Length: 178
Image (cartoon, rainbow, N blue to C red):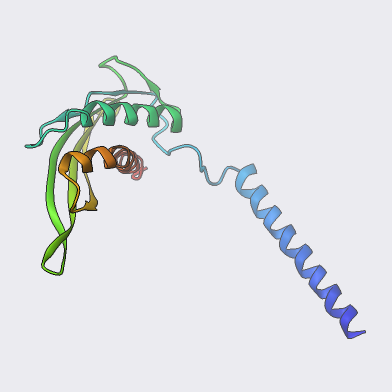
């Protein structure tokens, strides 16, 4: 008898849990309280122009600027409803400058360099032509690599990680204030 009661209670608890999860899921998706796919931005912004991110760092990786610019454009297209344009009269004109690209030692083990670090910093400027104002942001990220790699080997192995990481940070910074 006690066993039947416990099994019945367990079934009721499971049914209640499933029902609650379904209800919460329905509320979130049905009422669109949260949006997991789209970035949030002012409703009066419809078009965006992304200028080429210039490389003004003292050490220049020639692939960084075009790859970062392309990846940011792709991310804006795929994760927002903003229409990209080459028109200087776009609602937002995004410009950027790679301000730092430097290597340093980040870890020492047994009195020898164990890891090195690549630091990349980007300055982003958003000219909001609808509101007639400009917002500026600085984004930087560190990438550690084994000390036995040359800088060229490190750049080659970290290339995709650098581009993806910086693009995500820039995107999040642009759309985190709305």
